[in-house]
Length: 500
Image (cartoon, rainbow, N blue to C red):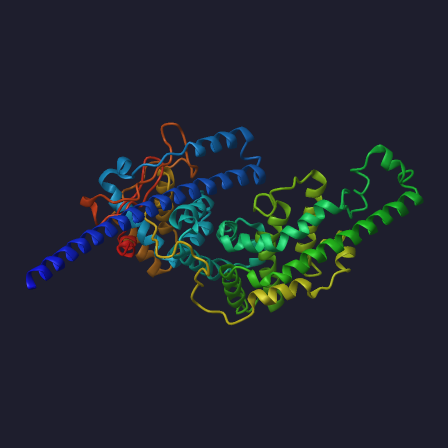
């Protein structure tokens, strides 16, 4: 009886070994598929964000970027290819990899460098800020990168806004490192898209359906967009009758605008429950930090927080809802766009103090409850301010570590050059200067840097490293990149990924 039992046991053990081996192979294949999919996601995110920056460059700074240049740039981005960094950097790839990895893991140092660069009027400050978001923190797709970037923003509040003579003007200008990073972060945040869609879709659709006239409230411009036949109804220009009819038209438009803006505010308050936790945290940190500044009154700090949310987050989505995916099934004509801009401008004016408000809009602003926007801010900054950045409530990529950094060769050289120039200045603390010295000690002197552009030419296109790591490079990770290059050797990323 013993012999058959042993045969049975051996048979079962063999079957179990085959089953375990099969399951291991399946898990390995699934892991490989996940890594390949993640790699495609990183690539698509990098290209999409560069396309967005290119579009903003065309819209906002058309004097510096011609349509032809931006179209050529967009075409080159579409043709982006990714390769390993060692093909350009050779043995120096490991050195650059360690430099990028250590810089990425030190948000305080990143913030200090950005602020010091601005104070030194460094030529590439804004470009480096974009590189920090798109490359160093990988467009914040991964939870770890989001946490790092939130810490960078918090330190920027402390080092840049708190130390500024006029932080509000700095914010409104929109060109400081904090404003740029906040805008880039909020544009790509999934929870932010959910909030904007839930809040703005309905009132925007109602605006598109209900009104076909320009809601102009400036008496000097009311008749400018009217046809000659419509202008005749106002009578002779300058006459008493003309002035009365213009005033009547202005009052009618004001009433419509006030109703529209109140509708937007109502939806804003109604959907505060789904306001992104990450943005809530950074606005709370900003309020907490700036409230401690003696020269700033609490009311002024509240105005800055509201202004930040409206100017950098909500109003751009109102004016261009298609770019934010809020509406996709309804065309926006010139009239509707004008009226959306009027709504956005009135919301921004409501965030201002009486002294700062546009005198031409005081009549319209007087018809609003002054506490309407303040109530929204109270919900955002309410509660206990915690030091640790919040974890994403819905992280579909939990447990997955980023294995590549996408950066053009030129962007890498500019970044290294920028750090060296900051070190040469006198705007860093001693410990920060020592940390930077350690960082760049082994990094070779960069070649001549022309600009911080991607320099996407047929012979110089962006590339990245593969997601899988060769067996003979087991302790190295492709910190991937573009323009003939991707970086290896991210020890920390590797240790985080070992479990997969």
